[in-house]
Image (cartoon, rainbow, N blue to C red; front, side):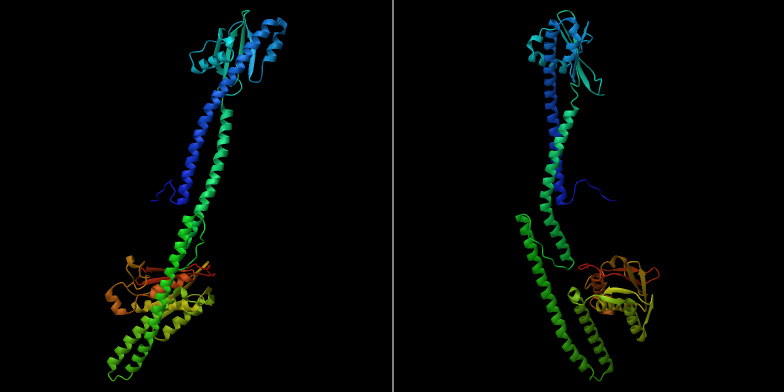
Length: 448
C-alpha cells in the first residue's frame, strides 16, 4: 500500500511549506483585521451622513414653502441615501440591537442637536443586492410629519473585503516570490550535490561547483576533496592489484614450462590444470579491474557475427552450444568488452550445465540476448547477489568449479557501460536464463 503524506520530504519542499503556511496565516489575520477596521470606518461614515441629512433636511423643510418640498427631498437624496416625507413613522421600532444602538450613539455624537429628537432606527433587506442590509429610520419633524430615510448597504462590507483580499493577495504573492528565490538559491546547490553524489556512486566522478551560501560552499568543497581522496585510493588499489596480477604471470609461465618436463603424466596433468585455473583467475581479476578504465571506443558492430563467432568456437571444441536469431543486428557498443561479457555467460552455462542455447531477439528500441542453460539454476533469494564481485553461492560449488566469482560481475559492468541491463531468472523447465538488454542506439555519456 502506497503511503501518501502531505508534508514534503525534501528540504526545499519543507522550507516552501513553512513559508506558505506563514503567508496563509498572515493573509487570514490581515483580512480579519482589515475587515474589522472597515466595518468600524463604514459605520462611522454612514452615521455622519445620516446626521448631516437629518439636520440639514429638518432646517430646509421647516423654512421652505410646501411646494418646494419635492425639490428639497430630491436634492437631499444621493446614490446611497434617500429621503421622503411621510405622515407616520412607517419604521417599526426594532428589537434591542448593539449595531443600531452604536449607530444611534454615533449620530448623536456627530450632531448633538439630534439627541433629543424622536428617532427610530431599524434595518431592512437591501432593495438592490441580495444578502445586504440597509439602515432605515424616521425622525419626527416639528410640524408632525416624519422624515423617513434609507441608507443603503450599511453593513454590506463586501466591496471593502474584496479590496482587502486583493491587497493581501498581492502582498502574499510578492512575499512568496521572494521566498521562492531564496529557496532556489539554497536548493540549487543541494540538488547539484545530490546529483554529483549519485554519479560518484555509479563510478562517474564529477566536480561540484562551490556556490551558494558559505555553509553550502564548505559542503561542496568537502565533497570534492572526499571524492578526490576516494578516486586516489581506488586508483592506487587498482594499479597495485593490476601490477601484482601482471607480475604473477612470469612465475606461472616458468611453472608451465617446467611442468612440461615432468615424467609422471598424472602429476603433469594436475599441475597444468592448477596453473590454468590460476591464469583464469588472474584474467578475470584484470578484466574486472579494467572496468570503467577501459578506453575501448564504441562503434557499430553486428551482434549476430559476434555471437556466431563465440558459438562456432565452442562448437568446434565439441560443446553443445547453439544460436537462434536473425542474420544481422547492428548496435553501437564496445566489441571486445561485449564479447568478453557474452563469452562469460556462455562459459558460465557450460560450467554448470551441458547445453547452452543463445537467442538474439530484436525488440523495438532494444535488442535482447538470451542465454539459456540446463544447469541447476540459482536459488531465488540469491539471484540479486550473484552479480556482486567475489560472491560465491557456497564453498562446495567454489571448489568444484573454481574461479573467484567475478564472471557475472564483469558481465553486469560491461552491459551497464553500454547502457543496458542484465536480468537473471530460473527457467520453469530447469536451468538459468541470463538476458542482456542493449539499446539499439548509443547510450548517453555516463549512462552506466
